[in-house]
Image 1: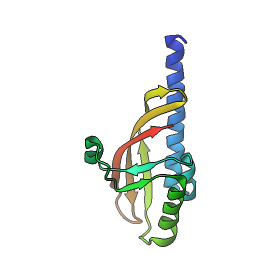
Image 2: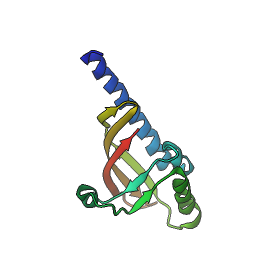
Image 3: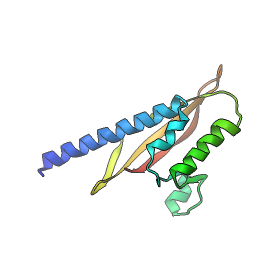
Length: 135
């Protein structure tokens, strides 16, 4: 494969990752939470971890889900058992950066910011961070 073909392949992969991230954000922003686990493989992992712990290699995470089943349980908990006032979310995701290609596995990173707005309220920064994905 020529350098030009490799560059085109990487660009196409980045576009695919960006489209996946956009669909992911839309599902969450539009409160289609039942779709969220479907963005992961059956044994996929979802972790929300402080940067300090990640950088130091410490395992402590605010949330660590180890499978689609655990994600479905989380969706049930959030939608059926937890009450909070109404709000709207908006995810802003940067273009992905392809970190590596290992066979069929694409490792990518993207920065994100999530804003939350309560009806009649001012938008506020809810969370900022980085997606680190193996696809």
